[in-house]
Length: 149
Image (cartoon, rainbow, N blue to C red; front, side, top):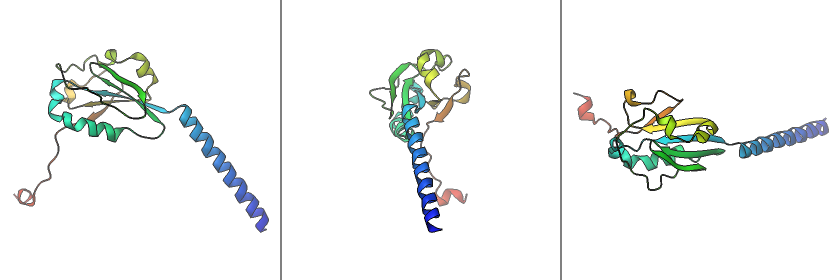
């Protein structure tokens, strides 16, 4: 009786290990691709110091590659982490035809597209399937004195 259980357990562990290895190999060969579009217009200047930390928090997931572009053009291609480089806010904001300023090959390869901005909802692009990641001023918690008023 115990010999049959041992054989079943050994077979089950081997099959589980083989399936896990196969899935790992599949994900290494075809990772998820996330296109991150960063608004780097003048209105982003007040919150620009928060952008590097936000990019670090968004990137680094296993089996995921990231490409970074701004509303002005590409920054870097597919890699495991997002790297802002020397990008700084400049020029007026124009998110209206954003999908035309990003390489079409990146858009077609991406499984998800994120837009990092502090723009008002009325300024957001209507074309494309964007997940908007807001970046804004830090929220200060209310003190006990201001809560009682």
